Length: 180
Image (cartoon, rainbow, N blue to C red):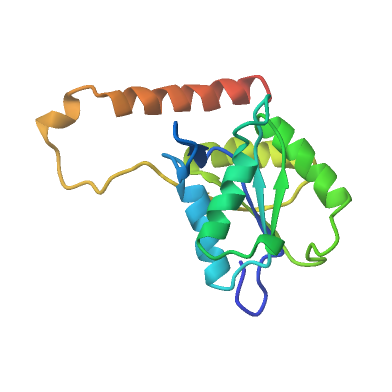
């Protein structure tokens, strides 16, 4: 666990927490807790650097760059933000392995590293990290749960958010089954 006296060497923010709007403005999306959590750690003095990951095939809306821009917009210095490409979690972990094998000048030399991703994704992400011999402290966020204030018949009515959450859970399950 990081402290102000012994901050994390870095936290990795897996892509998927931000996107460009149709007006080409960077903004947090449903998984934006990832980027927000990294900013909180930086401002609390609990991390020395941040790595944003994620890319898209045409490079036009890479999550790594959008995440870096958003972190800078809330006061995280650009010189402590690094980026690593990858179109999916497996590719991001391979990119991180390469990054840690050949870190750029200025990257902190010592300390523990942590991985920030959505709670539903953390288990699979940590498994994929271990396949690359990467050792991270898990820092899940965005649990997508609500405070339970008692049963209501309304809870039985299907809604779009429930279908979306089911789709994400199914994706994680299938990803685990095929080893990705």
